Image (tube, rainbow, N blue to C red):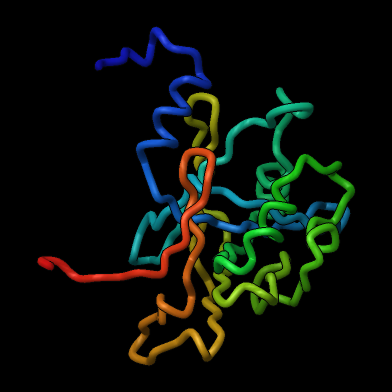
Length: 198
């Protein structure tokens, strides 16, 4: 079968992409508004953008459902404050992450709604998720409008990891971390690892 994306609806193309580019890591992004309201939301269009200097990127789309046509709080807050934190989601935090993805009003603190603990960052204003074993503080490098979405690139200025998840020599214990991955409409647990060739 062959598809011409220009002949498909946006949702149809999205289904093809999100079902093919899998599993995707999840950036659990914490930001803060001008009024000081804490915000937390997951994004699976996420990857490393540069190793030197270390930069990460997320793609933020428009609001959906009852918030269709609106700008997501994450994008608004990053534009305003120029800072954010990427927290890594371990599988056991899946329900809390899902709760933080709900379409809540802008004045609602998603940390509180999801039953999570905000802790101070070392450099940036947005809080870190205490329960997340890895947190990366970022300062905004640039925002690139791309079609319907916005590519946000941030420079990592601090890296935090719980000691139990650190193997030494700058290596992560992925077997313990079991990071949550995003599939089309589902999630995956990364817990079985192997080297090639088998």
